[in-house]
Amino acid sequence: MTRDPLASGDLIAERRFTYAKAAAEEGDWRAAAELFEQALERAPRWAAAWFALGEAREKLRELDAAAQAFRMSLAADPADAQGAAAWLALMGRADALRALSQAYVARLFDDYAPRFDAHLTENLGYRAPALIADALGAATPGRGFASALDLGCGTGLMGEALRGRIDHLTGVDLSAGMIAKARERGVYDRLVVVDAAAMLGSEPPGAFDLIVAADSLVYIGDLAPLFGVAVTALASEGLFAFSIETCEGDGFELEATMRFAHSRSYVEAAAREADLRPLLIRSASTRREAGSDAPGLICVFERIERQARA
Image (cartoon, rainbow, N blue to C red):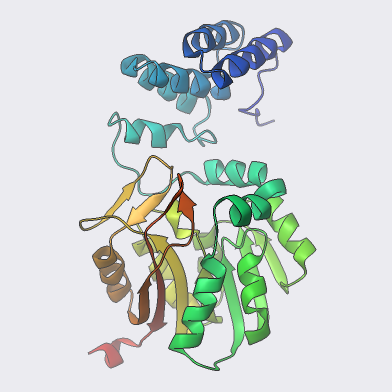
């Protein structure tokens, strides 16, 4: 049986953990760290407690101790449901990440699913689905789609925005909780709990004439592998429409928000290598972050054949 990294198996350890979380919420990071350590004395393989200790030590600016705690969290849970590898990268104590762990993203959105729609629209001013739908309308006025795939479909906001233009709509997400919410919305013909790249790689070549990704590429740094399998899954002249958050320079970087930002030049180069040509690229913010609009792009690319590219 696989051990749950979020559980300790020890009631006293879990009580200490609860007290530590309360101390952390009050900003008493020293007390929190001591209580997390007490919990770990009883449950030394508890990944969630090691991760929480790492957070507390980082808040105390005890960076060596924080890094060691994050490494212990990874050792206890190599799938990394806590996101310890990302913290180590952000601290400069590990190599840069190419993507966040699937276990972390799945846990994040399983926890988020019950309040996702309200939090996004009321607190963060989320508007990626509407912006992508508008961009598709501008790039290909009046075009309908026989078969579309919504990558990282979440609760189905993107699917709802496009349903009227699509004959058959598939949604895919790592989070079972999100897929359950999307099923309640009733706009998808097919819903699958799986990684986006794995889904694309398992579909017949040319299966979709539209692939969309609203606010899901921010959990992937290196976009080249995903673009490669997306092109294979697209029909000739099929479209790939998505949102990203942007950074300066050339490339991608993991930000303190635990989301990746990409430069425009990086996205264009990765798309070009995958035989995708731009139909429309717009500067736009899909959400607010810490009270300010997060800079981003709305992109619509078209699959081209190699001979056409030459």
